[in-house]
Image (cartoon, rainbow, N blue to C red; front, side, top):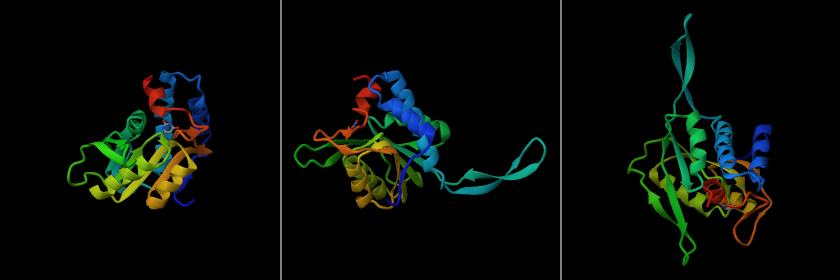
Length: 207
Ligand code: URA
């Protein structure tokens, strides 16, 4: 599917397997979420624009490149939080804008309970961070919010997706690139991705 990128990197595959393992305890789980967040972001940012600059080495002056784009990291609360640190290590000047959503029991639609975005956009590229792309409802709602904010370039970075979640996000926003470590088999009747890794929030936060 166009604009959907499932990582084939051996490090990603190895770390993802450790993450799935039910015997992996919280501390190690958080470490893996952080590392996978960074590895997938490395792949997701391969097309960021740069501008030519001059730089003085100890020997001479030469040309190099600086990132041209202003990047926003958008973790979806709460499980997206664990991916921020690893990504921030790669891009320390990125802004972090949290989005919190819950599902209205009557309409079944996602409703934002936390959104402190200012009126005008302060970034040109947003990376949405959420380990699990399950139904796709939160991801679609977050992209809607960011597009309304005025951000044109948006990417989704996650760890495991269901085919249903990929289809929903891709159908609603085909321009949004989806970078994922694995696309699993299906969503079960409780909304869990199978084989998946269980509840990414509970496993990170020990709840
Ligand atoms: N959220 C999770 O944490 N796990 C799933 O499998 C689906 C949604």
